Image (cartoon, rainbow, N blue to C red; front, top):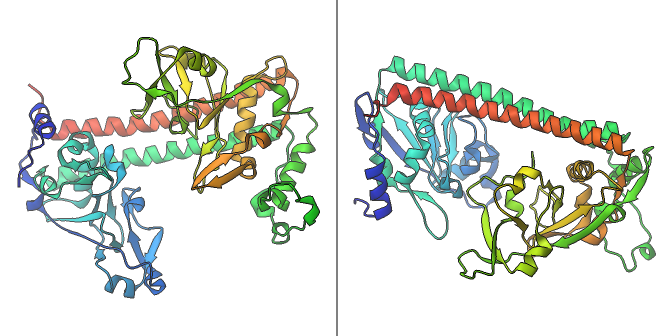
Length: 466
């Protein structure tokens, strides 16, 4: 049945693309099937030797392994099916379909769940060429095949089957695959260099501060066992991580540093919690509209990402805004949110160019501190607090209620800050920022390599616009 969504029909009219080669609709060049999930109530269905792919597994283009495995019994007792090597896996139901069509090509046989569709192209279409078709034309294809609901995005199977697939000769298909394979290999290498550089920032900071941090490899079984007198816990919060030998060793390493020490509270000029404000659609000339920073904008690798399409503008009364207006060199702390593998306590730094376009505020899940620059260099404190989060000191400063993790600000402010002389603080901050900048440049170079390859492939496949 044809789709009568007016937004969809307008998009089709405005975005037409014509291929240089003969085309055929997808359902004519590839057969397809979906899978299923073995019951979690039967442990014997799981942890076998058959890779089982769900949407979270579809990350690498050539997929050879998965996080989850099922048994032969689990495969036979469910609607899950095996995809043979060379099959194209397409995620058809996931929130990621808001902006990306995840696709992989199986390198080995694997079972799949119900949120993945397997495409098996005929002899005229190479599997990797079909997979790359969805990647190269991602932005054009998304509005054509993705439907939105109140729960989660999914692909419209009827519209998917109608997609025009260009069919150049096999030699040209192989050439396109080689171009994109090479681009993604270069991207992977630059991404790896970027990750290594980011990880080395922690090492640089620890070495600069003469902190000999204990590694996980040095943590023995006996280190995981601790004893504490009951009277020592009276009136205190009990978190076993705080009394573990691992945590104590980290704190002893910090305390052993040769540099002067102060609590965070001693170097903070002032601090305040955020405010979520009012919806930006509220009409009132006395209200101030500004971009309101949430945990969503915190970038774990770099700093703040204020250019993404998920940023929110909110409105505030002048008195409220005056309390939470952000200034250059302010530090933001994520005090609520987090996840199983990411404790709260992430930090961000307000740089001058962030304030050029619009006023900035921050949500009630964020806390702002302003460093007294007569006592410490703000850029250095930001790097130091980020280091403390990276080595998971903040894990022992949080509670969890109703699935939300909350930073205990009273404990956070008591943490020790190592304070070399101001000149050394500046040197440390500048060098760490330069390392992070280079890591970002490597990431951008990686993205450009792939972007250029996609443009090259588009030129090979699409007719020139008139």
